[in-house]
Length: 107
Image (cartoon, rainbow, N blue to C red; front, side, top):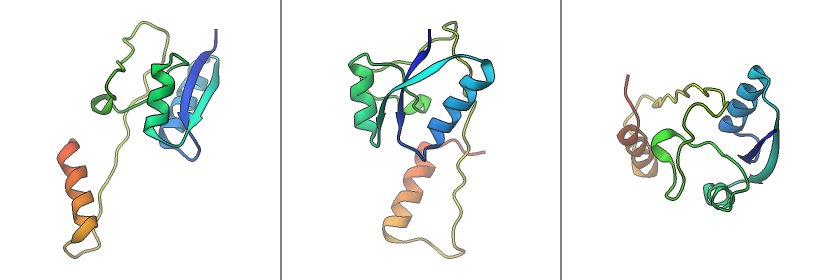
């Protein structure tokens, strides 16, 4: 049975990751819903249309991670790198950088 997918519209990093992982393991899939917003993905998942992908610590209220053993591949990790322009950031750019750094894992 194909995995029913709820995905962001392209281009999307998570969309590419999940489709590549399913192709690699030979698991059939079908896209049942596409949205350009997190709210749209959440609503479709809450309605039971299919499965979607979120970062583990960013799973929206009302949704839960599918435990291993359901025949879905490991999606691995995505690394985001924050680079500055060589000078101190200010305004919205500084706020965005601070939010990313506060919620991410530093290595």
